[in-house]
Length: 504
Ligand code: BES
Ligand code: MN
Ligand code: ZN
Image 1 (cartoon, rainbow, N blue to C red):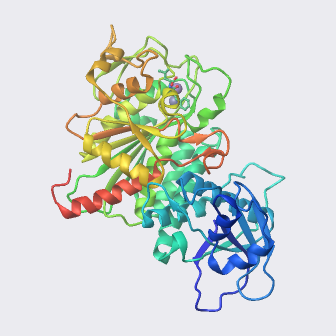
Image 2: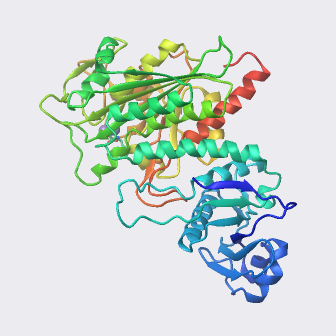
Image 3: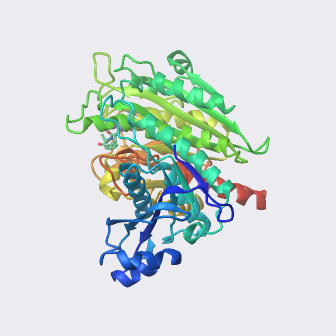
């Protein structure tokens, strides 16, 4: 990971290779004005007409003197208040440009305000984005490794970074390190990320932080009567796992926040098999599980004053002679039954047991994260995940946390009218609800497994968990979507309950 420090103007900082700035504005004049004042004159003499044009890179030798040897000006387009995603993209292209040019150290200036965020949120967002700017997943590339000479960045404490504190840099480093882990878990192909691999890796990370970890193997899962998880697992030769992380940073008697994640390490669809095209994307069908594990690990690193329990339900979904089949009726941990109409709607079948299991911790609130439905992509595309909850206040808090971390949520309803869609002639419900409102039907199914008195939100992250190309400043593959917004929500919740002891 990059070394990031805050540049100290007082001491004679050692000379670095590069100085990166961003130019914005309509036309050359505005572009020049957008640069740090001390650089303007030098650039004016040499700069091209379209200094600020989107994606343009202009370099200038700075010669002798302190500071950097070479100046890099990256075009950022016309606007000076930009979207967070654009900022993430700019930082990523800065890291790419510096690496390609063989620079190993750089000073970074950033002067734009970001939409929907205040100054502290902008600093947090930029710092995390910077720590993630060079993320890649080269583990399986033997030759042709991308060289990454860039090691250290010194932030100029002005512009968007005015007033930045080293404590903020440290916090961002901790979160970005966990985000990298979450992405690695997802990007690792399913042959090396079996349910047992996931459990082993998470156990190691939890132990290193003193976080309590419990792993249920198949025998223990049987004992818990998790009929849904066992049904989905029947097609696989690999054992299922349930990983439970418990972190107690809050008051002793305070009910924990429970986080539940879908961990299908590969989803072929099972007997209701998916088409071959893009089936490989289903190695990311465990991002919900990776996200909730990541939240607890990061909360521990940040010493958040909250009590947390996170439950990851892990299995493969494969067809075989022993696989569960359409028409089968499954009995869940809570005694309810469901007719399996489509074995590809497996996420809700495993989450049913995990949500019910979470109630054992008597949580104050439950959030679940799942790449649950392709319909989430149809509804919101790649820009937002869906949040479902019957608690207006919780919806507001989560949407707001998402706006401030650029992990955006949009709410859809769970009106009782939709319950009819999952009515079964043979069991308490069926696991599909027809084509219309596909994501809602999934949420309605999960709702059957949560005590209505416990505030609960379901986040369908199918559209945002991973991208099939570099997109919105994210690299191809896992995004770690949900980690930032959940940490933000937890921190705000902490502040809220500190004020009034009523809690939620
Ligand atoms: N994991 C998929 C959902 C998914 C699809 C995530 C595309 C990311 C990208 C889930 O298990 C699934 O297959 N859902 C079905 C449900 C249907 C059979 C009711 C779907 O969305 O088609
Ligand atoms: Mn599926
Ligand atoms: Zn799935």
